[in-house]
Length: 164
Image (tube, rainbow, N blue to C red):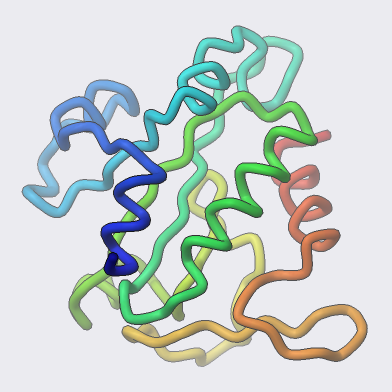
């Protein structure tokens, strides 16, 4: 099975129109609108009335952007789900495929996988980083290089982004 086939098996995606309705977007972006995860776990998180930040504050927009040629996006999605569940963040994940250089520039995409909350990269790239279809590299706290963020750093970044 292909990587994208495996991802499709793990995540059910809604139509672009449904994405626009859910997020309040007008749908003016055309056919490249982001899909939204609608797995049973995500639906359960979406129905959590506490919102993404807790205390009745508005929900957060959680995005995982990926380029299909990088194999780490599936593990990134799993680790992101795990972290959100552990932190009690009850929001769906918009899983978005970036497939052109122009889309990479428009999305400010520095590589796959990229995780954003409310449009902000949880691991901001250094100034001058190029927007491109490429595999992203993360440096862990112990100095190791990895295709995924350090799980502890991911949880810390999510907690800070949602105010927990």
